[in-house]
Structures are given as structure tokens and as C-alpha cells.
Length: 110
Length: 114
Image (cartoon, rainbow over all chains, first blue to last red):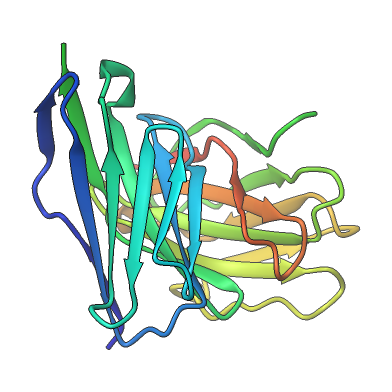
């Protein structure tokens, strides 16, 4: 069966450090993978998309890698700030739908 | 411009009652999706509309759930004879078209069935 697994534990990190989140998937062959941010009581907000032929993508302090052999994406938040505290969801395109992982909650301590 | 809007933001109902949840997508977006998010869970796909094509209802959990989209714009998700396990956040998203790479989400409707 198809599965998308993200870090099962919440991440608590000190301001200024790098947070690294993992997204592993099985039985998917996605053309691309997306990361979304979700704050409490809000809908997810799109952050980054990385295609199957791209190894790495950056946007400001965010970096995403995509390894289709390992079936894994890593999401890095560098120089983290308390405002980065949120739940981060990875999503795979599955035909015209998106399939989401359960998310990883990140808390950045000042 | 306005984003995706949903109403009501919160709904408390009694078991067995019917509820209607509304979604107003971004103007010009032809694709519309409904998802359900239970506490601590990922988003569960429910239904997808694209233009005038027949909707993909493959994610609807039971025949108590139905949705329609009028005039290619506003969508309504109806849950009949609500059960306590229907309690969740119902999220609507829209994208520019089927190949739309970014889905824009509304704030969700928090449904609590007592």
C-alpha cells in the first residue's frame, strides 16, 4: 500500500540552529513533491516544490532535497527563528491529487 | 485578491443531524478539492472537481457524504446523519487547473459532532 511517513517526533530546536525534517514514501512514483506549512487553526500554505529530476531546491532559509532512489525528501530550515514554529507537511502528487504526510511539528525556542 | 474562503469556521451539531459546509475558491481556479484532517492526522482526500467534468468522489468515506459545485465556483460539502467520527477539520483547496502545482487552502471548517 502507499505510505508517506514524516518524522514521528516533534522537533524542538534552539533559535539559530538548523531543523531537518524527513519525508519517506513507498509505492509512489511522484513527478514532484511539495512542502507545506500549517499553523494552528489555519489551512496549509505552499512553501516549495521539487521535481523528480531536481536534487535540491532553495528558497530563502529553506532547502529541500529529493532522492527518488531512496524515496526520500529532506526539508531544512536554516538559521531557524521562533516564527518558523509550525507543522510542516510533505505532499506527493498522485495523479491530479495530493497525498499528504501527517506532518512534523517544529518548535523553535528563543 | 481574495483567497479561498470557507464557512462556517466552526460548527457544532448533534449526532444524526445534517450539516452543510461551504467553500468559495479563488476566482479563475477550475480545480477544487475537499480534504478532511482529523487531530494529529494528515489530510485525507475526499472529493475533486475540475471544470465541467464528473467529480472524483473516490475519497468520500460513506454515502452520507456528498458534494456539489455550482457554476464551476462555489462548492458545498454535505454530511447527512452526522456521526461522532465525522468530527474533524474540513479543508477546501483550489488550484488554477488540473495541472496546478500549488493548491491554495482555505482556513477550514471545524466540525464537532456531539
